[in-house]
Length: 112
Image 1 (cartoon, helix red, strand yellow):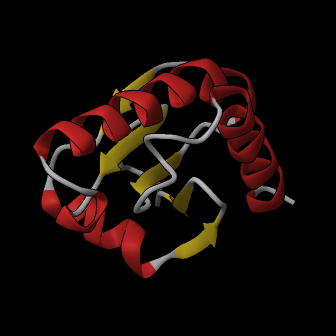
Image 2 (tube, helix red, strand yellow):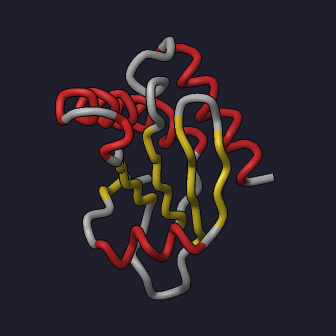
Image 3 (tube, one colour):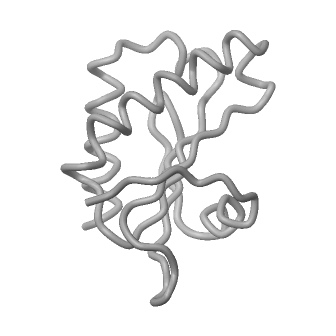
């Protein structure tokens, strides 16, 4: 199962109009793609300036990328787009194992 990165704004906007679930460390948005769109799992990451300065935003995105890399190949479903949105104060500081558990439980709820 291939995982690719969302880069186009239109893809982020489509996911934003779909479903969302908030966890203590991040917000997960997801949508099932229509037939004929890209194959595999696609994931995007975003952190607004509310998360902090550039250093804090980059650290938060690195952590989100790592939990996605470890979790999505096993728990993600083919044909879905996922967007992980960093949250103020918690994304950069929450315990990493708790973040992994947050993503696993969010994906389980998303696909149930």
